[in-house]
Length: 380
Ligand code: CAA
Image (cartoon, rainbow, N blue to C red; front, side):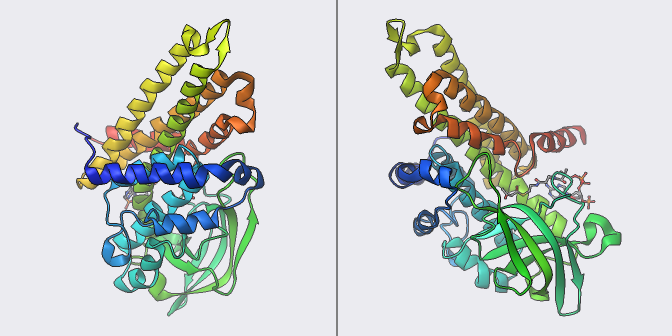
């Protein structure tokens, strides 16, 4: 497979790299410590077109392909995975979902502002009792004629406190199981919608994760996405692409940790020579480099499949499964190579280690990816 990047793709990669180095890096340790969401940086990313990368220009997006998006995700994630998850959710879950399944009126009202970065969005599927088992939705959206009455709780919602627009999955017809689920567009200031406490997290601490509470929220019928009962399919189809974004994030975390470890190993001396001259370290670097390249190939392949109209459910799941494992492994090894310094915040790698873990959990755990992969290869 030829993944030679075009001039435009190289430019986007460079722009993301520059932004990450110049804008994200300076405050990244402080944001991690204080769990501060980078709203100002978020605005700047919107101005640069990073928040609606694949959205058609007619709706305020950048009109780019998925490969450009994963290149940007990798570069941003090499420095700050908290900022990049916000980018990923806005691009591949919220904007992509609305552009592909929303009505023209929904696109005009919401997508244009989301794609330009004027506002950001959140994707609300997980619940206290419906994480991996996503069909077990307890949040209800009862049909009241011209509106739905929304009640329930959502958990671990990325951009939860800072979004203006929320795509909420809820059960309308309990007797129909997953075929009775709907996806609704909820606005932040709708009566009865409450943002719950911010989660105190192990990693991606700069991202804004909240629970959400819906108490008799009246959502107009025109805010339903797709036909009645399309909500679960909407979530699955959207997540299939979202997983490519998270795979790219995991790749970026791995590559970022590796680059720091490589540099450190050429500077740090032990037993009279740079530690990279010791085979114990050189072999670790060799393994890291090889696995990162393999992960990159899987991520690019999934993006290529999506861009060329092929089914990307399998390739996206494989990319996420493998890249997130490589992210975790590489970050742990980067800490090991840094020795005592690896345990200290100023050297960044301990943050990579904490941030890597979530890539094996959100948008479908590694175990869920194995369900998706095994079902796909066994179905014929
Ligand atoms: N595209 C289209 N339809 C799909 C699909 C896909 N990729 N995957 C499943 N479906 C459809 C199935 O065809 C089926 O429809 P029919 O009955 O009409 O055939 C329906 O969805 C139900 O599918 P299953 O029978 O396979 O359902 P299941 O309960 O056995 O399992 C699952 C499905 C794959 C395990 C699913 O529940 C799943 O993906 N769980 C993980 C949820 C997840 O990823 N959560 C992440 C939260 S979002 C997040 O993390 C965002 C963030 O903030 C970072």
